[in-house]
Length: 467
Image 1 (spheres, rainbow, N blue to C red):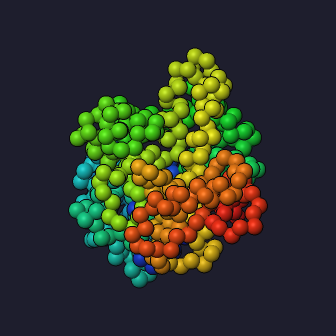
Image 2: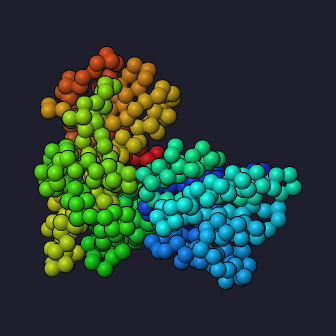
Image 3: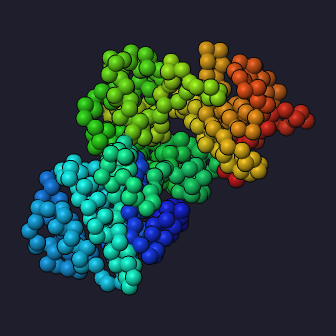
C-alpha cells in the first residue's frame, strides 16, 4: 500500500499502456458507486497532462464553464476560464488545441451520465471528435493525441449509451474497464492486524468497497466499528443506503420497500411483492433498476439445465446495502432513542452469527476459483448454489470436465466431522445430477476442522481460503 492507495495494478497497467502507446485511446470506466473509479483515474493522472471533470446535476452551460475552468488550471492556460461558449464541441476543441506538443492529453469525464443528462448531444459530439480528429491525430512525430476516459457509476447507462450498439460511440473504444469491488483477499489488506475471522466479518459488512473499508478503523473491534460507523446517526455511513438510492433513482420509497423485503428474507417475485406492497407486474422494473446499479443480483439453482423463471430468486448483492437494510434502517428509531450501543446489543448482536453464516457461503463461492487454480484444474466452470423444496446446497461448482463440486459452508463451530459429511451426503441425494457428473464434496469451515482418519469430503478452513 502506497499513499493509502491499494491494488488496481491490472487496471493501472491498462491505462499506462494506453498513455504510452503510439495511438490515441478511448477507455470507458464503469462500475457501481463508491468502488474507487475516481481514485483510479486521479492516480493515473498523477504527473501527466490531463483534465479531470466531474459531471453533476446542473445546466449544460454551467458544466461547460466549469470544464473550461478546470482545464485552465491543469493546463496552465488562464484564458480558457474566461472563454464564453455554450457548445461542448467548441470547448473540447479549445482544450485539446492546448495540449503540450509530444504529449498526450488525458480527457477524463467522470459521472458521465449526469453530464449527458444535461447535454444529450455529447456522445455524438465525442464520436465526431474521435472519428475526425482525435483517433488519427498526431501520427508520426507526436503519436496519438488524446486519451479519452468516460466514467460512470450507473452500469446500465454506460452499457447502453457508451458501449451499446445504439450508442454513437459504439465500436470505438480501444479498451474498457469494469471496475469491481475488491475481492476478499485484497479487502483484507485494509486491516492487516485483524484476525482472519475479523477480516472476513469486515468483508461481510463492507464488501470490497474502498470507502467503506477505510471507514472501519483498524484500531477498533468489528462490533465497535458497526456502532461507530453505521449506527451512530452522525457517522458517514449511517445514511449511506438512503444516499445511494437518492443519488441514482426516483421514487426511492418503492426501492426502499423492495430492498427491505429482500434483505429480510423475501427472495421470490411473489414474496417480494407481498412484503413490499408492490404490484407484482411493476416489481420487475424496480428489480431491474437495482440490478443495473449493482445492488441486487438475480440467481437460479445451478444444475446445468436451463432455469425455470419460477426458480429465479433475488438477493441484495452489495454487502453494506444488505446489512443496512437488514439492521440499520429497521432499527433507526431504536438506535436514536436508546443509543448505538443498545441497538447493537439488543437488536443486532443476537442475529450476527446467523447473518455472518449466510455471508460466509458467498465468500466460499468467491473463493472456489482460487482453489481450482491452486489444485491445477483448468476446466471451465460455473459457480452458484442450489435450492429446492427439499434441499439447500450452499455451493455448486459445475465444471465442463464432467465433474460437479457440491459444498457445505459452516461458519459456526464444527464438533463432529462425520455428522457434517453425512448432512452433505443427504443433500447430495436431492441434487438433480442430470449430467451424470462425478460429484466432488467440499466442506468449508471458519476454524480448523476436527481431525479424522476418514478420506471423505475435501475440507477448507478460513485460513485456507486466505492463503
